[in-house]
Picture 1 (tube, rainbow, N blue to C red):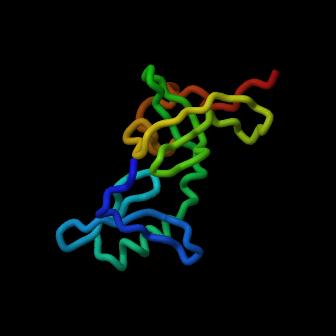
Picture 2 (cartoon, rainbow, N blue to C red):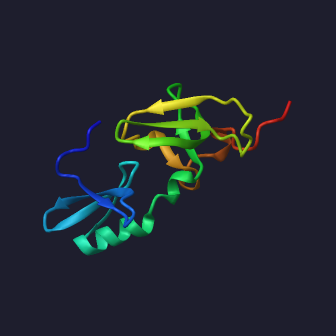
Length: 133
């Protein structure tokens, strides 16, 4: 998806994109790199919020709902407005050959931070490290 023309890029001092702001009446809505709406505030605080949020949250574990409705613990590999690619969490084992998934941007409710998963955690496949063979 190309971003709507009314989305205004916010970049850090090093030019790294941290999100967008969109005019909403006399205020601005923040949008993070996963396309999630955040604060409704003035320009200064919107820019400050996105710079403070940064990009670190992209390294956090997420729960992803696959096409069959089941959930799996994943780590994000690539995030852009062209799409989001993720991999089943390998818990740091670089030799693990695990499934990857790709979805459109923005992902909507199919991708949630693991800490925000409100259903029974037992529904998430791969919540614990996988058995070594």
